[in-house]
Length: 510
Ligand code: HXC
Image (cartoon, rainbow, N blue to C red; front, side):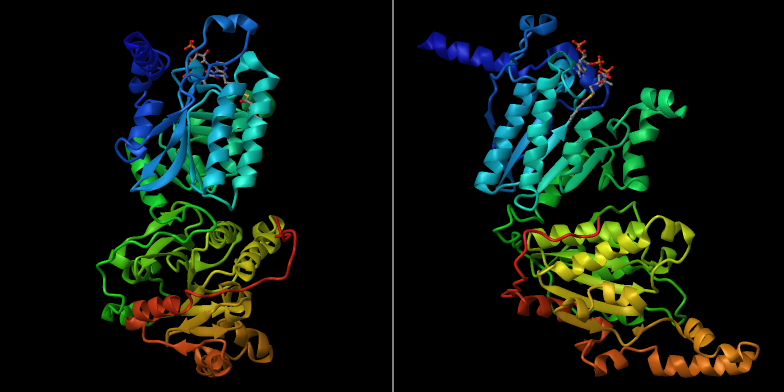
């Protein structure tokens, strides 16, 4: 008996060493942690339950039968984050470059199936040379099985990808279908074809970092949601994100103890809006002042900064925030901001996270670049996402809410449940100057007359009261009392049920 126990321990010890100390040292030398060290940091201490530690590949081509590392390049199982269950896979670059064989894929599929069955998020730590070249089509089939599960799990359990090394070729499409992608600066990259192929096909000379590094994907392509300095920071931030999320689409987000008075009055908000309507102010200040303990988890902070998306808590409960940012492009809606916010709204709706929308929007960005690239379809994504969302929706207009953008930003007409406006709001078809130049075109040569018309328009329309008279705004509120009003609004909506017409699924303009 003792021998068997010793053998088990020996086998475990060998499996835990992955590709051996030399390769572990090389991994550390690149500033990367090993697959197991990452799991240790991600999960609560001693909570990891491993599966399939002894799985080996079945390939007999290219001499592969002579090297059969236990675990086959991926560590899988489940554990907890602050006591809540998550499933995890962590690719081990020290074992055959973390490459994906049929059995490696099978291990990932097993925990994805369990996650869906048991209603817990899946966190995938990616560090892999891609398809195991020796296995050919078996590897591709394995990827296909993972992809299919990513699709089936979408909207059922949250899926989070952390890219901590190479992720190239078709392999990128598994993370691409998950809800959030995090990258590590200087040690991770994602691309469909690498720099060498790019050079051959398009003659462009580009480094791996420029083509698909963390900065590229958080600033230019918006493929990734955030970039972190190192593995430790990235994993700590995944833990923080998971704390905001429900475990699955049937359960509510966790309620955290809070130490911040929901009725807290913020007198400084009364002067947030500058006297000059064209002067910007920082919408993040409002978000931080509304949130419990000023805790804001921003998603896609570096992309389309004219709109802000992320999570806060009110009375300990998660709320998704979408807010125009007047500091960037005057908070205008454009292709990038509409896409960014639409995806965020849909995530929140999938997982029953209520939505708070803070509006200061002068309209959609004009121009050929926008039109040629399809601002009509992309803008419609956000419109569609808000209109189909059945979670509690509370809106606060702080200043401008012009034209189509007013309707898009969770207006009453898209079934906003409670729509507030500050007294500084201007709910109108457009700004006074633009409106005057159209309806009083005949007076364009006379600046005095134009100024008088603009003043008249402003007095009539540059306020929240025309909309409030029609019930499109439920109440004009004091800026200082916004946290209290919004917290009470969400409290009143906790029992919300909003059935939609039966359909197989909608056809959001992609
Ligand atoms: C088998 C692989 C491998 C792979 C790496 N290794 N990639 N083994 N299949 N795809 C092995 C190496 O042989 C090496 O083994 C070890 O992993 C580490 O690799 P190195 O090259 O020494 O590391 P490094 O210099 O850091 O370079 C990493 C790399 C490079 C850039 C990822 O290994 C590489 O280019 N690999 C091939 C990438 C690729 O073309 N993959 C297929 C893409 S197509 P030893 O024993 O020496 O430690 C694809 C399709 C997916 O993925 C489709 C889904 C539908």
